[in-house]
Image (spheres, rainbow, N blue to C red):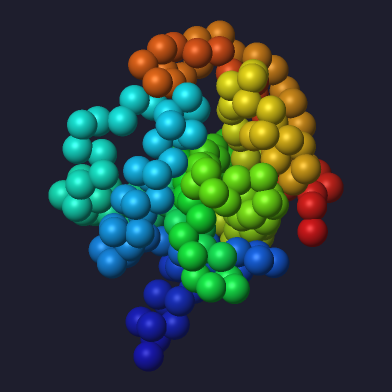
Amino acid sequence: MALLDRFARTTPPLVLYGERVRLRLPQAGDWAEWAQLRAESRDFLTPWEPTWPSDALTRAAFRRRLRRHMREAREDCAYAFLIFRQADDALLGGLTLSNIRRGVTQSCSVGYWIGRRFARRGYMSDALCTAVHFVFDHLHLHRLDAACLPNNQASIGVLRRVGFSEEGYARQYLCIDGIWRDHVLFAILAGDSRHR
């Protein structure tokens, strides 16, 4: 019993609940729905993401991704969540908390995507708000960073709605769709006012 208690205290929750969404770590059984949503949203997503490898949507690639996500969660260096609509359990997208740094930094970065048919309906704002609470209230970090392309007005709007502040501009910050692209940098701190 003591081992279970210790495990419960040190393992973050695998499911996070927002107002309309639920975030949970991916599982092997999610592959088909995930691959379908990513495939049907490919043209919508590729302008904002790193270049997809040729096997990006295969079951084997998904399994490799799962193994990496599980290892990173165990090591408390990243948490990759899938986002589901609570009303019907439909897969909406994904959100990753990465590059968790402890010590004097106490921070991490967030990235996210949403399927084309679910965009601009408030789901990502709900998911990001839920993740912000997890970062500050459960992981006890001090800072959450985000970066987005200057022309991604939808993402900039989501970040601002949740309470992120614009902090700067990074030249050729990330390689997106095969090109090193400038990004606008945002952050929210544990003490900042936030949505919800």
